[in-house]
Image (tube, rainbow, N blue to C red; front, top):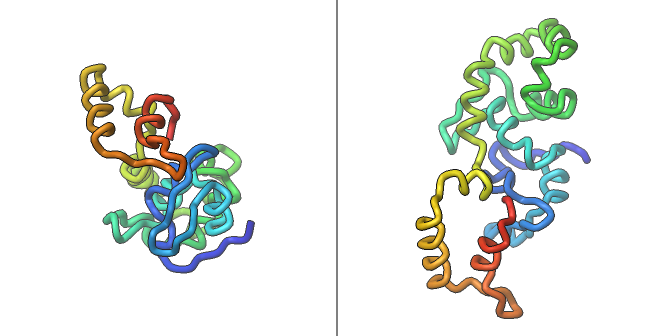
Length: 167
């Protein structure tokens, strides 16, 4: 897919959560966002959005990123090396050390990893480690009170939580 950048913050935090069972409605554009949409817009898989934000930064989330490394360069690195951890592989590391802009990334890597942890959203599987059975019951009761149904009248949130689907 081609790399298309409409604005510095054209990707949304929630885009990293889409998968074959999760689609997001972008209320500003009216577009349905799925994995293919994200790949078309950014040129990377949606799972790499935290990597992208950790390198290039995100002003709306106060993530500074690597000074002097923009979104375009970050996208090139992610396409070439796969993810930020791939940039530390022996062959990638020696290649990156030859470029001034790449050295900035290597010098800032502890911060980049911290930014990654901040921008990575937890999945429902991660949340199961946080919620005990009583809290899960309370969550389900709360969801039952908030009725979100699809066009066929299926209660989306309740079915989603009961299914154990990972985000």
